[in-house]
Structure formats: structure tokens, C-alpha cells
Image (tube, rainbow, N blue to C red; front, top):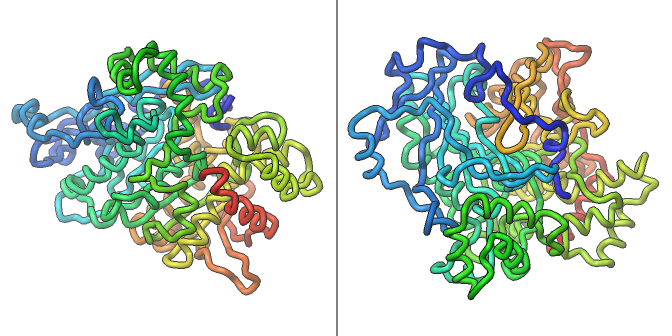
Length: 559
């Protein structure tokens, strides 16, 4: 069964008792909350009071950016927020925005758990801003899309308060978007918008970006200087925003971490998925239109059970997971094909992966690739076998990891980096610091950097997560990472505001031998807090050649 490595580390069911609202208890400044106007923002139609967490940071939590997608709005594109309604409901009072909202309904992670926690009324954002900022401050903005395979994820598990404490000169927005079948149910009949809409979870993200354009100035942000960022499915979302239609003017920079290169099938290819799902949700009779109408009235528990079952061996179709599809209007082709055709937003980018990326797959390279990419045929698999001979690897498990990991994650670095470097500035990285709380035999596995970026956070089932303590060396390394990221947000260059000890990050351009340079992100040697462990390397030629092959298979892998 499909499962991200990050989800398979340990079953982390409950939040750490020493944390409140995703922020370590030691970071909260009790007694400051609600006592100063520096933590109140006026959007014109409503005022919100946020948490003054550090003395210089305000977290405005759970601000709606669209109408609730419930009832007849289920499986439909997000509806712009009715600000008149919001204003009337506030009644002139300052609205409390000091508690995290309910997250979007979760699907199983694939690790034996059942999904179903959360709420459909989840189209919210968390906004983190320096205390006392005002319209006209024109601070650069980071908009973050979380990962989780488009199946699960809770922005509460990725707090940004400590980023501000380090560098209080940006505004950060973290987006909740619909997941699983609630966000990515597809059937060919959705080409008729009276039946439903494709890719509504992705459209949620776009609507959040529109809300940012309309409202971020009130938080001191500059709507003309927005960087989108995400990891895993969030990184895949960033890639999709780079190639999708209707994104003009919504962002001007992008950071894509461990881009999830999942298949982006045609609606016809997921018809059997729809049939199985609707049957097990209790909607078996009539036309597709009638089945969708039934699904709109089905209980959340019925929908959750059906979507979890669809991801298991009970369903024998090739496309088990609910993910974006090529709808022909917003997503017009698999993203790599759009990149190769030159159909992408020409903005500065950072893109990278961890050293040992993959997802849990069957035991052989051939079975793993078939599982991940259902349209690969025997001829394709023979070509993969030639590109990944056992003699190039130290073990069968390493061969499996590399052969699957490059297709599903790693080769996004060259797929994006090569085309962007030809028209704008691009920087790439290899993240090489294992999550110290995970299975060390996996090396630097998928999502390892999240632990470092977000105060030692590991995510669990149904939106839960747990903070674990960080050593001084780990904290020092995290500050290097955050400095690079926020430097890019501020100047579209990771070097402008990097820490003094950190090396210059070279742009992704060809050297004399044709190879490109990247940084390797890892912590200081010998537990040092003063010396950086980050260094440069050339991309290995075998990886370059393999990824050229993988990119050439984008039409068959549909990514």
C-alpha cells in the first residue's frame, strides 16, 4: 500500500503535551495575547485578533478565504468569500483568530490507519506577520502549501512563528485545501460544470492566492512580491501552479521541495475509481449526475470509509489515489510536458530533493514502477532495467530506492531546474540530513527537512503531530535553512540575506564540463554550531543521464 516514508516512521497520534496550537510552550508570551493593537488587523470588512507569540510575531489563525464547500458546494470549485456576510456576522466586533481551525478531512496515510478526522468547512489560511505591521510596509510574502500526497496534512504541524523570530521582515500564509476525494474526485462528466468541477483542491489553493492578492497589504505584505512554497504534494502543487492556467499575477517566485511527480491522468482513466468509490459510499443507482448528487448528501463518515477503501487492494484499478487530473482547462497536460513545451511561469525558483527519496512500494523495481505509474508497459520496464543495472548499486534495496525515487521525486530537480535556468534564475539542492527520530536505515528519507524546518515536528495520523527536542547543532542548521529560504522570499536570491557562516549557493548553470552545481544541505561537522556543514557538488553524471531518461518518459508516467 502506498505510504510516504515520513508517515511510516512512527505512529504519532497525539500532540506533544508541551506545545500549544503547534507552537512550543516556551515560545508563547502569555499575558500579551489580546492586550495590544499590534495583534489586530483590519481587512476592511472585518478585524481579526491574532496570537502575539513571540514579542515580534503575530499568528492570525483560521481566516476564511472562501465559502464553506459543503452541501451543494461539495465537488465544486471554491466560491469567493462573501465579505458582506463575514462583516455582518462580526457585528463590528474584533473576531478572535487565536486558535487553529479544524483541518480539512483526512484520508488514510496508507500505514494501516483510517482517515476521516477534520471538517469540510476548512478553506482557511493562517497568516504570520510581524507585530504592528501596516498597509504600505510592503513586506515580501511566502505562501505555503503543505504536503501529504493530496491525502492528508494539517498546517498546524508546520508553524512559522520561529521563522519570524529569526527574521521578522516577511509575511507568511499557510493554506488549508481540500484533500482526498473531497478535493480530487474526478469523472469525465465533470466536463459539464453543472455536474461538478475537476481539481477543486488545487483550485482552493488558487483561491487562497487570490485572497492574498486582495488582503495581504493589511498585514503589511506586498501582493506584487509573493513566493509560493511547498513540500511533497505541496511541491507538486507548486509545480502545477507554475504550469496551470489562471495563475497570472498571483506569484513571482517559487520554492519546490521534493516535488511529488505523481501521475496526472485523464478523467477517463479514473472512471473505474469513481465507480468503485461511489458504490462503496452508498451511491450506486442512476446516472453519474445522480450518483454525484447522492455523494453530495452522503455523510462524511461514508465518504471517508469509501475513499480509504479505494486506496487498498480491494480496488484493483491502477489509479488508487485521488490526485489532480488533466482537466484540459486549468491543467492542460502533465506538468513535465508543459515545462518541456515552454508553457510555464518564468519566475525565479529553488528546487531540490532529499538524498534518499522514495515512497513505500512493492519489492522489485518493475512492480514498484508499475504501482506508481500504471501506464508503463513491458517495453518501458525493460528500458528502466537497462538504465538502472544492479551493478550500479550496492544492494537491491538501494536500486529500488533510486529507481522509484528518481521518477517520483528526484528528477523534478532537473526537469524544473533545466528549463527555468534557461530563462530565469534557478537554484537546486540535495538535502542530506536524516531526521534523527526516523528509521536511520532509510538514510535522508522523504520529508526529512520538515523535521528541521519546523521545530522537530513529526506528523501522525488524522492531522496529529508531535514536537521532539532539537540539539543546539540542529537548531543552528535549521537557522541556516530558514535564512536561505527567507532570503529568496525577500530578494529572489538565497544568498542576499544568508547567514555569514553559510556558503554562497551557486546558481544552477552549466559549468565547463556541462554539469550543473548544487548545494548539499547538511548540519555542521562534529556537532558544531559555528561552522556550516553545507557544501557544493556537481550533479553526478549517472544521475544526470538517468533523469534525462526519466524526463523522456513523462508522457508514459503522466507526470
